[in-house]
Image 1 (cartoon, one colour):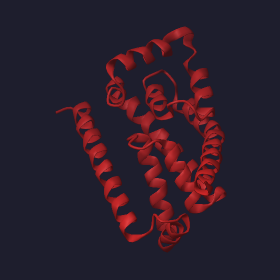
Image 2: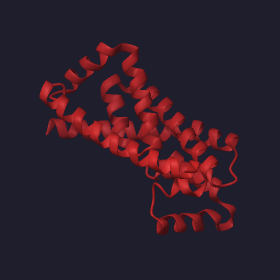
Image 3: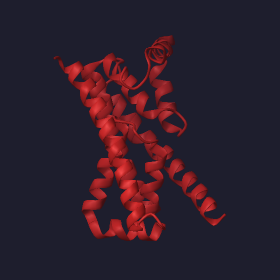
Image 4: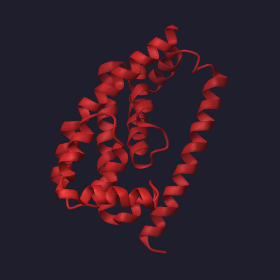
Length: 197
């Protein structure tokens, strides 16, 4: 079995394990009362101190590489659990590291890594889009800057192009703060609106 097949098996295993873990944590949190209010959840995370913060950063990293949950949900969780400034910082660090990991995986495994995320038809459509007029780097930078594009997929796609590590890192480090801030602020306001209704 080569490393591409190994990665496929790893992808499936982690995706299934992640879904099971999310389900188990949801049931546990509901039964133990931690999901009844934001304050109760914050109190739980504060008990773990820096370990809880490290775990949250790890979750953000993993959710980019293995997109089980929408990234917006985990961004909202960071702000609700740790407040706007620290929550933003933890979101930013985790997502940047995860994005670089996705890029690195695609650089090493090529097209097969992206094929684990999207169908063959979608992949071919993205590949045609990438090859058009050599504009991928500019479109990628614009997509990373705004919080509406499929960032995780784009990081994998970027790894299959001639984009260098330096280009990719600059785009992620400079472009992510704005999109994460928009996600965090927008979803927090929406959550507060729903909670007040």
